[in-house]
Length: 187
Image 1: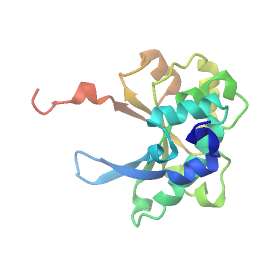
Image 2: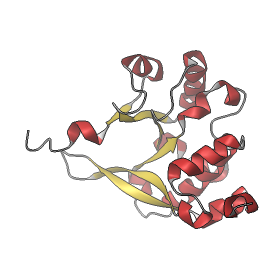
Image 3: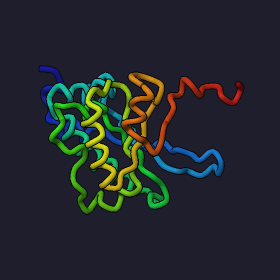
Image 4: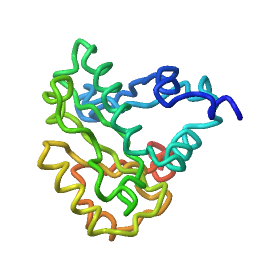
C-alpha cells in the first residue's frame, strides 16, 4: 500500500491548497477574475495534478472530490478583500459529464457559504478528456446555468477540442490554449 492508498480523501485534500491566478482585462489593466488552481498535490503523494484527478476517477469519487474542492476554493476566494468585484474561475474535469456521473450533481446544491458566490463563479471545462455524450453534457450545463453559473471552455485548441463541442457547451468564455497566443505581441 502506497502513501496515497493509506490516506482518506479528506486527509489528502487537507494537504492541498488553492492559489489564485489573476485574469486581467487587457483593455483596462484591471483584474477581471481569478482562476482557482489546486496546489501541493505532491504533499499527498501525487506526481501531478492529472494523477490526483485520475486517482479520484478510478476510485469513483471524482464528483465528490469536486464538491469538496469547490467549497474549499470558494472559502478561500471569499477571504479576498476584493472578491465581490471579481469572478471565480473553477476548473471541472470533463469526465464529470460522462455517463458514470449522469445522476450526480456536478457541484453540491447551494449552501450558505457558496450561495452568493454562484452568480460570480465561472466553471471551466477542460478538453483533456473527450466528451462523448453531448446530450448529457447539455443537460448538466443547463442545470448549472439555472444555478447562475457561467461556463468557460479552458485551453481551447488543446486536447479533444472541436467546434462541435463549442456548439454544445455554448460557453460565455473561451480560454484559448497558450500555444496559439504565445509570442502574439511579436507576430
